[in-house]
Image (cartoon, rainbow, N blue to C red; front, side, top):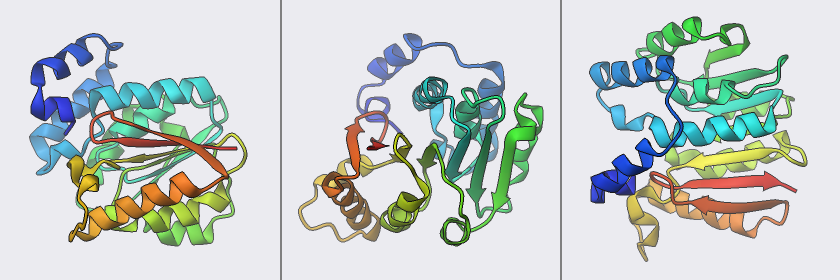
Length: 215
């Protein structure tokens, strides 16, 4: 859930009505996510989806990695700008929900370029030798710092990495957080800020997106 969605819904509606329109396949997927899942707020959503699409179209990446598929909304947003020969690998471990992204991936014009894996992301990153142009992480927060360490060697100059939920509903401002996820997100943000191999900016979009570019 976004800050404005919770604190100022009128502003949230204003932001949505002044963004580019949502493609029909995403509109259908968003509706079905809210009807059929117990935590629909986990979806990337309209505004963040537009951001992912614009970044992808600007970059025209050949190789995209997504950690945390959920129902596939962000996946489809990222495919919109892929190079003609591009592909996206999207990872999740929720077998019970896998039917939903598979349904919409099959409907997508990019169906042949989406590689949906039910696999632990840490195991995948330790096994792969692929280099990724664009990476989006929206998964288990307690592994965020480790994902950053594992992803870094899989990037090159110009690669873009995005971590979602890095403001964690404002909990990152807690002086002595007791929640493990809050501690790790703070650790992640500190690691990124101190890493001279990246330039970054935290965007206060929805629950915060840490936007990194490899120098």
